[in-house]
Image (cartoon, rainbow, N blue to C red; front, side, top):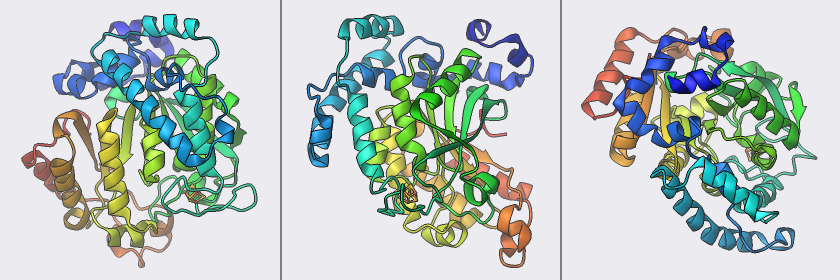
Length: 389
Ligand code: SF4
């Protein structure tokens, strides 16, 4: 409550859903989103800020090959995680960070190293498991993007999960998936390059304004944010305000990209869509979906807090929803994860235009289907009630 009085302007405070306030009285939410809460309330510094004060002792990054960059990162990451753990125990606070950063002067940091690594992986592009391996300044990738980063809108989103709102949401154009039912297909598939072109400094300014005017977090979404990572990660260099960073993604990044993200992301807001590769290929046009996305969930869950979103699709309870719940229960630390079982599916995009081709998807999801998934999740010990609506 005190947090709101300090940060959220009256204009937003009056429009907030009551559950956005009272959700923090729920012990499970506080326990599972502890890191996010500490950063959100300015008690401890965000991961990207900590990455700025880890010195790597090497300043000619551009002259090194990619494998040397990775081996330098190994040691720096150990230091970073030690600092994160200290902060999690509240032994290293935001005021400590503010003191330390002044004493450091100009250093080459873990964040500089991560920026360099992502720029290398961007040219040729290996940011996601599509592995287009192209130079996006010359050709368009499977995500339908060139080398620029396009922001279609940014605002205080009041409709996200209760612990997140008001969420400083930035919608990037382009997506590496081609979901036939996409609800954002105008920015992800149809006109991905029609947004405002932003560079890292401009993107940092957007994040700054969102936070200063009351955002609890910065929520990178799309489309899909992965193809814009080269700009997003560099923007952190120019962002000097404490704010939790959220990666709101389909989690189809390459393993190396996921590892780099663990240095700067405070909360993973993941979209776990399919329980098998066949449905993923038929409906979203991606291969090896389950192997890639489950691998990335495992990596991400080791670092940072996590909310898994699962949109129940009509007719996909047994092939997708239940296998996902089972996998989450068996493979992720259940005591640290929240799941949002979503019931708001509606036929959009190609499904709305060609309902005969995707018969099972040309209707809303039945209440019984959602309840079946929820009951199954409950039996497996998955916590979903505080944030599923
Ligand atoms: S981000 Fe785009 S260009 Fe890069 S590998 Fe993925 S789909 Fe291809």
